[in-house]
Length: 266
Image (cartoon, rainbow, N blue to C red; front, side):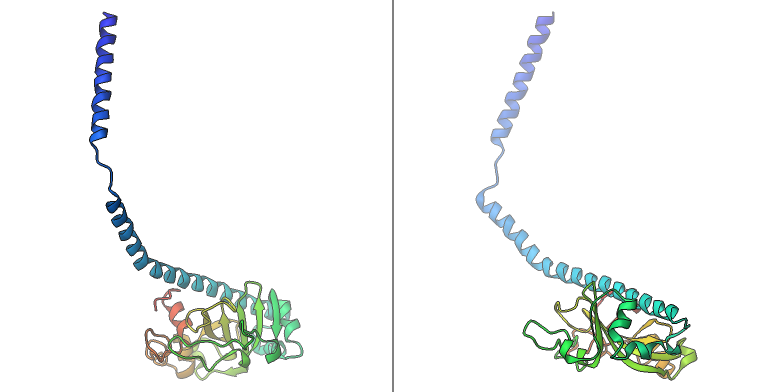
């Protein structure tokens, strides 16, 4: 009985294997032409999607770097206010900070830096050709604003920070804007000498208020401080931050990016 069972089992198993082997033989492999066509389609799809994926990745990288730089700057100025026992920068802190004779030593007290340059072209960052670093507009051409107008310091992250002293000038509409003074204009180049060196991409423009906070230029809060309304912001003037507008400066892109939830949607 046992031998009959084994014989039947083995016969069935061998038959099954034979059938499976026959099915495998009858299955047709891809031809070379089919493989090449498939690879060609994959290549076309990759060529169409990769530039967009890379561009979106770079945008997110710029946003992340800007967030970090803004946080670093605000923390540094809050530290300075605590050190000089002042409740705001108008207490006398910003003028001494911006004094060329003390600039480097004052910066080092409040920020982790690689270098500092108090508005001196001789120590300003330069491009690979040895020229003073210039910035592109978001649209066409180069920006009128450049590092030559600023005292700068370079953070350990590689970001270049430019400060232009405004002597804590009172803003026009203090109560509406929720701050009283514009203490400096601030330029942030989030990745230093790396390209594209372009406003709205890796370069952004702010003012520093007396509380040590950065207010993005041509945004709602800036507009309120300047005119008491929000009509002078990037939403109503496409030249501040819009693409593919050729005349767009990009000076209002920090405001657009932040007011749209830290999204570079342009």
